[in-house]
Length: 133
Image (cartoon, rainbow, N blue to C red; front, side):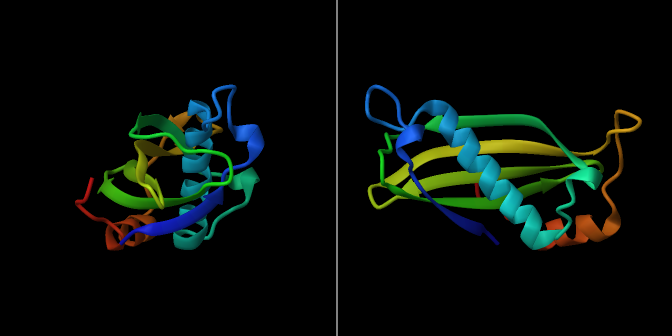
């Protein structure tokens, strides 16, 4: 099951060529990822934040521009022992703009080590898992 999030491109997210700067896509993906966490796990206290981003990638398909409404669809593609993978698809009325992937690790910041995902979270992530990439 996909989690959907919308973003309106702000002028500050564009570059001198008039299109969305490549770094902005990672910000959009982060925003969508956090909203997914908010919906699925509902744990949003930064003092107790249990995740670290281990990997993030983005493939650019076509340009996006100021004032575009972007739709970010995020799906869980893999659930491991201490991490899970997400696929992100960014689109607008012109079609797919970009595709990205990220790996999120359950992390203990005190010990600086990864930890097993709690079974409750694994169950929730498995319920939202899809094979679409």
